[in-house]
Image (cartoon, rainbow, N blue to C red; front, top):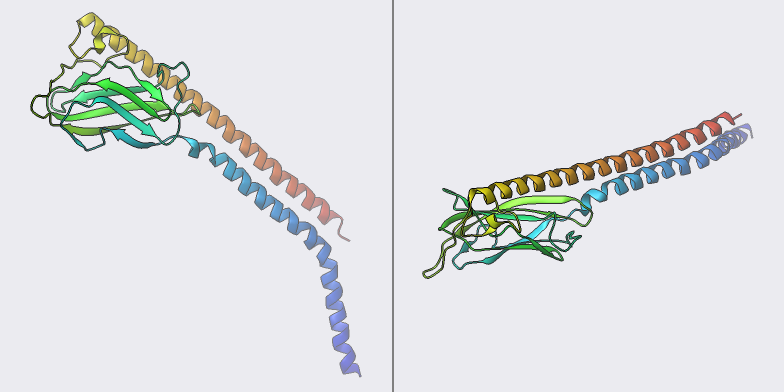
Length: 240
């Protein structure tokens, strides 16, 4: 009889032990899950803005292509719509230069934006490798830029344009393929410098906004962690 009672007593004590621990475990388990869920959500949300920026999906001419006919238009297309607040392509830029052994600039420096595509008009000069340097702005205000090259091998009968020594600015006399005087070239260079300054300001502002957003997520995450710790301490103090 005693041998039969002993196991029942042990099981009873073990059961009481499990019952005594179960309220605390039941309270702490949801808190742990809540903390993990909050951390995952905050991490996901803080990373979301970085993945929203546009990226290049195609260009004309294509990178590395051999072009035999005057392209007339040089364009880049991204995965989503581009920012064009005043309808003049402000904030976007496309420069065409070549050949690589004695580069000149071609086109008028003007850029038009339609949906996800930015383009500029340009006729090319002597045969050789040409470089397209471009910058556009995503609708979230983030500027993106890159370069690509293509090989210009004009077919017989193709009219060749005359380039200019400095990058043309839209609306400036230096933007013509036929060349320009020194004063116009200086003005174009000054305008280009101003455009570069505006681009730098836009990039700095974007970085500041991103930094403030990250700081907000960090503060929110610390708040959630603090709440979890406080509730856990209160529960532990109530234990007999």
